[in-house]
Length: 238
Image: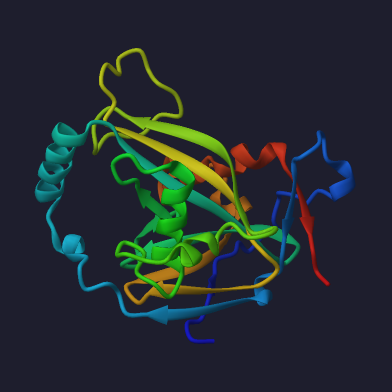
């Protein structure tokens, strides 16, 4: 493997069971997940045109405020990608500087459609190409082929200010929210290459470790197991 995929697991056995497909509670909620061993993980050089990792918190706040004044509400889209390991669903997360954890995704461009924007961001973070630059339709459509598809929006979060804690609803005090964050379930194919920038790590984290662990993963990621409770996971192992 070009980049060793890191697995984060608990000492105790996972507490979130994998439910057989036959136990689905309503039509359309089955999610096929495939073993981690079916995926290849590699690395590529980070895009040279991304100096924002060096900016200070004050510089970032000024940039976000200027963008809000010019464009209004900031909308971010992120993908929830699942794999199987030790008979338990694992969530794919990006880690930056061995500290913060992120879902793959990012900000939409002005007027950009949500699914199309998420395709672009997934290609930028998890593929060979730098999708923030011009790219072909075929490269973006690689995320929407056959059973490999960006599915439904499973959660929305709101920020009153760019540095504020996000809420999973719109509080009455939010007169002019600054950011809307949307999570989409991404159904992966049985195999795929994930190529991430060298300044990031791609981790497979068990849902049982993420669940309720806002201190480590933040309120959005730690709430994903609750959002996935409506789905039944069908592990495809052959």
